[in-house]
Length: 266
Image 1 (cartoon, rainbow, N blue to C red):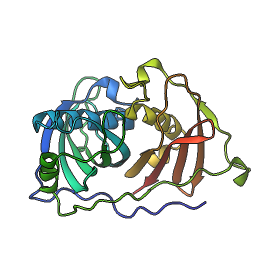
Image 2 (image 1 turned 30 degrees about the vertical axis):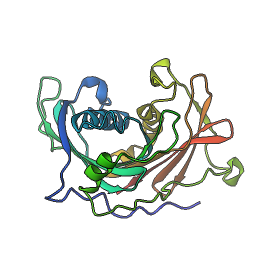
Image 3 (image 1 turned 90 degrees about the vertical axis):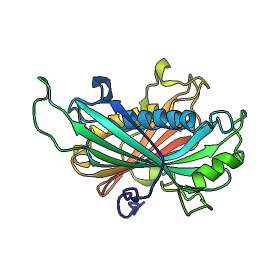
């Protein structure tokens, strides 16, 4: 196996990029002991702004159901607590059944008695591949009005899927690789559809990054591709490999990969 080549970070929005903007307060439950906004918290913010955007554009009835196939998070400057985080969401590419949605997160650091130090403004660029689905979870066409709204933000109207993660390696491929470990699921990790919440997957990534502090100390990219839902009661094992300075992970249920993840310096 070799490290994957991702190229440059996600670009900033153009001066003419339209979309939806909102702001959230960074809370203590959102950050790690270093007071940096965690990956799972960023993923939750992405879910929240997607729901807020859907309501604000009056497409909650015409295009109510979406699932995330992939999320890319480029942490260029960590967002730290205390702060207010500003989010801007727009469409960077679209097709008849799915869309690539960008969200830029910027922050205004604040000071308090617990964290009185001056800190740089935070900057995180993200991109998510969203699929429009029906009540059975099958991909379905975006409504005409929904498509027109998304298509007006981008010149790319034939979005196609290209995987960005590596295939699951065999345990026997690398005798020096660490053994698989179990990831414990909590009842609070599950959504109303009885699937593991998208953000909850990233708690496993946060656990693994404890052993790789060098990745977090530099600008880095996290890519997660959701391949299969994880239901309550499932046993989840994590396989991981270090390819140079790139961390590759797979969350598995039995012999099936539920999610593939890569964390790499930028």
